[in-house]
Image (cartoon, one colour):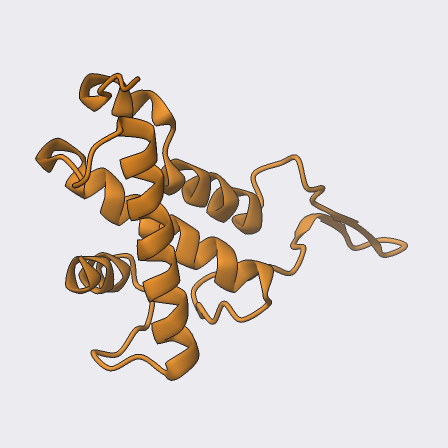
Length: 131
């Protein structure tokens, strides 16, 4: 699953080498283990069902990006997390910055991370009851 997660990160434009740094390698492994155990616990199965493999990859990518962003280590040049000017007025210099609840690049990125981390509705089909 590690190779699939790396490929998904690359497809999203996240710079990740084939041999990630030790901290990135640990974070990737941790995210994969966390997602794998979560899916197994929610479905009561010993393996991730085939129908949830892509979901598991996206969830691991979402966990990785969420952790990197939370730690202040996210290095994506195409995303600017600084507030951008919503309105600029020339006379008497008036600058209004976009507020957080609007569609700032960071808000869009956060929404994308939440999408990647998925809702557990996907697990219902594969859930097995145990006693």
